Length: 382
Image (cartoon, rainbow, N blue to C red; front, side, top):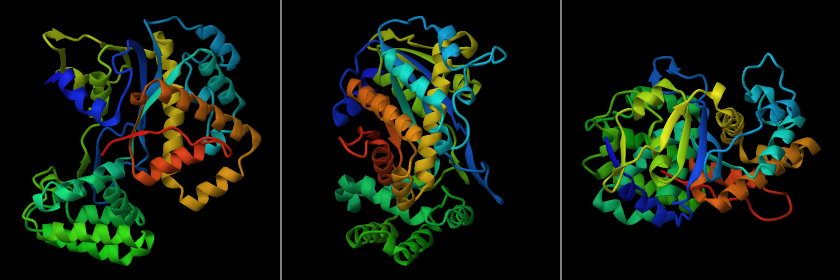
């Protein structure tokens, strides 16, 4: 596959007003919750919990620099028996338990002192799996005028469906989703309409009526292109596309990725071209020999816990938890806010989310100071 970086990056740069996209950064990557392939079986999903996939890490302007890993290991009190710095050396447990870690505070302050940016691309696998329903309907001429509302419609449909995860998985099973097909298309949409009506109290009345109207259009059209002729029961075949996006938007950066065979295989046949010039701007490296990847392991792992926590906790729960955080938890959350805001101000490409509007908003609200400015904007997708 040949990727013309100028052609591919043009639309997102214009749409989101991305600045510094031509900057020569050095960017390190690691990942967490890479489920590789998410599919539906008779017993349910092939993964115990559909936690958020995150590819992320650290970045800075200019050429590769040398990190004093010995000093970082010392202040984090990493034992000599640990070959690498891992998230478990900094914080353990669920997200709220991690926030109680003094080592996490030390690590976050070190990132700030080093002038590093943090970057991430986060994907909620269940959300990404269901948005094709709305995209299929809006691809029809009859519904094209509703495209400006697509993210709201996706959020509302996901709100209806996520209310009962077991029921959603049962829906997937019965319709071999995403291969609903022509013959069962109307039946599938009728079931979604029934669910929307039964759970209409989860939405504002206007939002419910908008969603209902779109699903009624879906009942009448002749095709749902993104949920037909697909591999039955395969919700996500690969997360590789999220590696490619950053490589073509930040074409002048040097990208250093952790050795991961499935991603190596995904990218081995991809050629990035800038005009007549073929780019050689990314490489894979063993984390044992790349301090930047070890640091990125902590960043990506922590953010994976954070976003998964947001998606799994209801609004009231998040509000109460935010009010009741201890001093150490509040300090670490404040440092996370500072890092994300500084990184976002440097380059909005560093923050990318495929999540519902609700989850994006609650993620930003939860980490912002109780008194002060609103949190950073996370560039959306899907």
